[in-house]
Image (cartoon, rainbow, N blue to C red; front, side):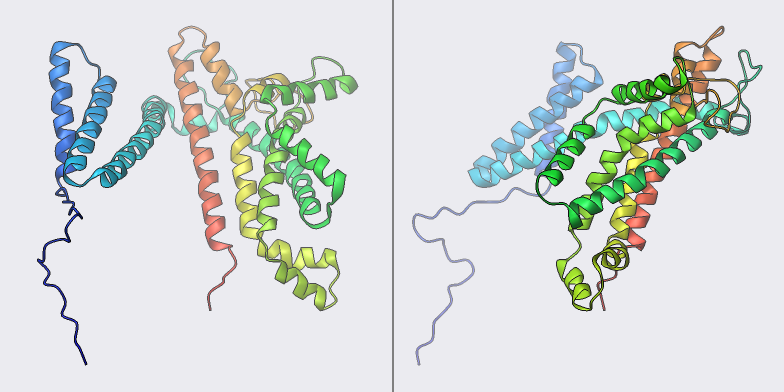
Length: 357
């Protein structure tokens, strides 16, 4: 039997096939350091602010890395490095406003994040002091009512579209949900105000009106998220239930919904986070007050977004105390939204169906 002898590791490449080299690992850092040095030289000739310096560094470093990679590694690897730099740069650009927003809100809002801010309202407060207890309670009440209105309607609509809907009616509902998803928030507020004003008279301001306005924004989000989650439930589970003689409604309640409960909970939580910071509908429907009102069916209520808006636009004299309260209210809203997103992650993690053995 003949034996094939392997070529030695250091054998030259076949004739006509060039062997591309590889840049060392420190080459990208060196290219961007060179780009930063070139940006510094440009800054000595012309005035550069920090943002322009970063842009010049990224652009010049990317060009240097592309040229070096093309000369050493070939065009294919150079294009790969170029696209990688573009993707990382796009990510960095997207993170800049987010990080700057968080830093600014933290630096401005932490000063008034104290016990008084959570325990007192603005009744009798002129200038220093006061808090947002009434606005925080109003936000929780209005958001809770919005959830009670939106979640049953949204879930039942999604169940109909996935499990029962066919033909023209299903297409019409899907089209209307898509249209509602793009409705401006102020239009939802005007709709709710006009609806209640036609029965209760003009100038009506109630917490329930704000809840209805937010429901117009929240329902399509719940429908869309729940519909996609229900579609992910395997048809084999439904068919196995039908084979045992279980009726369709009971299959949905006992099989489909428990299987999709993690995704449904996540979608509902994210929908709540979507509407908790809305301002325009609440300006029209709920208004503002300095006192604490726990009854959404009687009089105006304060909410955190509207509270921050009025503290910033009508600060009084001296204005700095009201502006500080506005920054703290904005920080509290960010904390609420972040907490809701964290709850959504936890729901998705702990309530997902266990597929492993």
